[in-house]
Length: 95
Image (cartoon, rainbow, N blue to C red; front, top):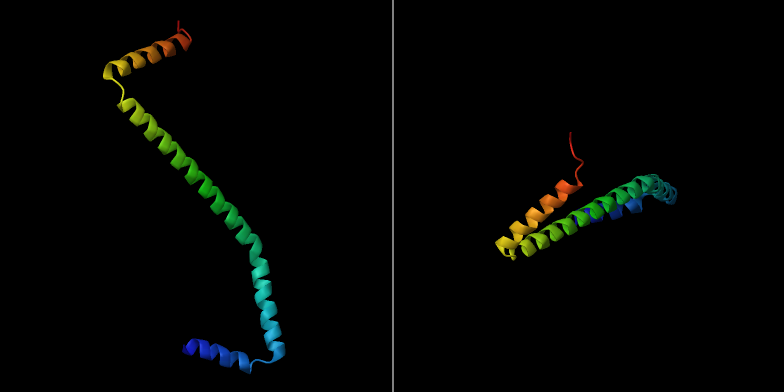
């Protein structure tokens, strides 16, 4: 509470010209920092977008893992063999 009282007393001691000057300095400070804050905001928004994309990717991977986990093991083996043979057919033949 003393800090607040000291600030009030200090303001009372300042003349109108000093108050005006202090306000101008504060306004200048904030105005000069606006471009930096805008860049920071863009940076934070990009980070947020990246985190959202990661979360969606992990969620999709979990969904696929659960879907494959619920399949019959023989179906998985057959699906793997089919995918491997499809891949071999798509690869260029080496001499």
